[in-house]
Image 1: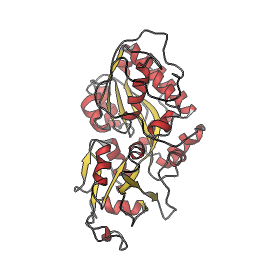
Image 2: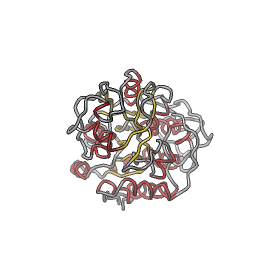
Image 3: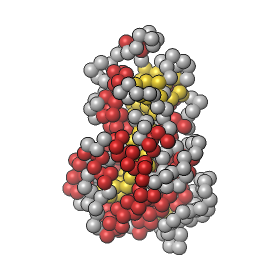
Length: 360
């Protein structure tokens, strides 16, 4: 049976979903800086070790001689987690599976599903949103079941130029006005008379991104609905660079990418329904108090999972690593709770046995 997080896509409120996940287990969160260099080249045996806790954690399959290839497509948001865990899986300082090679790409959640995972070309697809029922059916039409793993939580961050001393916080209502195709104001002063009479310059995720899907639904109110005059990209660092280079710009990006650029752009607190503004943070994402908190996932091809022992052991290692403090301290996301780890391991074993069925 699939874990309950599959129901998230069918109307469970994001706040309720994240509050449930966040209170299942206690997670120690420290100050965060981003890990991973986001290089899009394949990682091969003997990849460099990442700093961290100095141990491999449970379920690393260290006694086995594993070899083979693993192809991971999808979300740029989840990419830093997958990159770090895959390096640790290979590294002799951690799990030591140097004969397992990885090909990681950032295609966007939707782009990865559409172009790589559903056709059967990747083993795993990272996603910053739940898989849709349409995508599940297309996987089934192609002969496999997608196995869901809820791996971490994010605080999607609204950023402006560092010189924007006229704004420190923004409401979801004003964000909707700015980004909606029905309003699409040209000047900041069109949104708030206290703001500059200067053109609005917008940067965000490409339409193939799960972050785009999440943002348009959470902010604009309809998935895929957005004004046309914004710069879209799958490269989150380019969003930060664009906002940094334009004095009256605004963008949105995953918290991990903001923590990688803390001196480049300025993060805004966000309010909802007349409430107090809440700063983007891992604590806010974990509690659900931050209005733009969201879950992060990866999906595995069950047919490939049954066939490939090295894929089974990598996912087992991934799940057991996902509750490690380095997910917060080095990457910038809320780690899995102990209950999430348990649920993910159940999904893995059901997938290996061929008994898993997505029920979102």
